[in-house]
Length: 296
Length: 262
Figure (cartoon, each protein chain N blue to C red):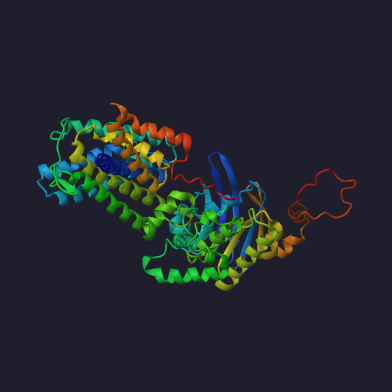
């Protein structure tokens, strides 16, 4: 029983990472109807930026964290403005290819930067390798602080995002733009600027995910492949739903963790895709997929 | 032309196209302040294109558009909304997952943030025109009926505090009773708030009943314009737009009458 709980907690922590990356997918998908396949690579860049801020510049963890998030938001907005906006009006496939290309480019460039390179780095967070015992040391539930931080940070971030989308004018305008871009133009909402801000937000969220994940998986050029697991999470939640991305991420994380322990070796890596296949057969729209049709 | 001194909106020989397809070919029209002007035309005549060109969604290839003293051609849609010219699009185009109230707030997007209290009051004022929306304040707009969505679309535009509104087929997909209701409220908005209206319609009956002045658009050209009272008496309008046939005219005549626009 304790064993099961243990697996669920560590699964949920990784699930939170999937959820955050999936959230990044969903935000951009809803706003621009394209999928940003470079999402995982954005996360990787955040890992390296955080690493550089802490080890090379010697900044304290919290400052490095904040600076990285700001830098990631700027990077996301810059990508939208310089690379993707000129493609406006092209078929969606063009955007997909462009983001896949950007991902390759990022992975390649990172290995050329002197300190970053092809090596595996460890992010020296203050809470590294610490554990907390719930219910008595040596016999209760043991949770690593890294996992705990991931879960808490995700909860806080999601709560903030909820408040932002629910109550602020910009948040509502972002939803409006993603639901009906033409109407947003008619209402005088600066659609292009809103899209740019959504890219910034999505990239910043990926940045958070990257910094949270870095203490567990280390920072390296191929760190972004975690994005391949986040994609199923978004699909399970019903691509285009924000709560769906969270629940989907948690499901994939926990299933993966359980499969890794109870099933033969190798199942851990395919668990996410099995879940997606089952989901697509049982409920093709995903858990929270909306199929609202337009009335005339 | 109505003998008002200075039109609030002036289109001068405007041409616009979608790629190689020319949708409007040299349209000129004037709207005097405080009036209701209608543009009649069948499917594909270019009615919607005229409105999209005015509101900056499309850029005209030729011609000029003057709103009060500002040139509108080549301007950003958001800038045009800020000048007080708001477009109520064809087919409602509400934000389906936002609540009714959030939809209305988006109508006020171009107003400064400091206007918060004024906007809240304006929402109440708009509910006076459409009480049903008040009951649905916190429902997602996608759950409203077609007529209620049309009401929401008009209300949302009012939240921008327009001096002029462009209405694209407000009768689309509505029952005759609901169409009449909507038009009566549109007229009230015009009378009570002094909002100038340019209404594009296929339903000539209703448009000619409520508007002051009318233009008839065929294949991208204005073929006739006059006061609505005068238009209602023209033979071509009667036959081709109002569907009035005099008894026995079919006898001894060509199978299809030609339009003369005289």
